Length: 129
Image 1 (cartoon, rainbow, N blue to C red):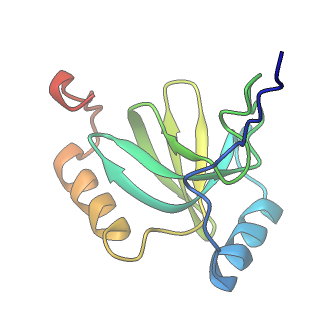
Image 2 (image 1 turned 180 degrees about the vertical axis):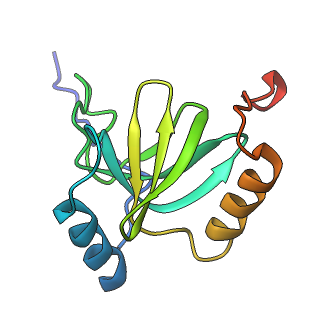
């Protein structure tokens, strides 16, 4: 029987800017209230959740689903707070620190989310899941 050759391909690999890496290092060295689940770079908000590239996830999972450099979509955002120099997103069971935003839509999408949500929880509509 012939051996099957396989190749693992990660479609979300990119080079990170020096700014991304510097902000990631600064975010990781800061103290936060409670346990931080992971740090995110290139973040934007979509349908009440954050999408970004994950680093230092406390539980990458058996298949490395949340390993460094992987794209992640968080569960619905419960609140957004600022701790020192970084924004922290709290979801139902997790806390993510935003190291950098996606340059074209990142900060704008967060401002729009905060404007619409105000101080209340908004679940993602079923049609956007």
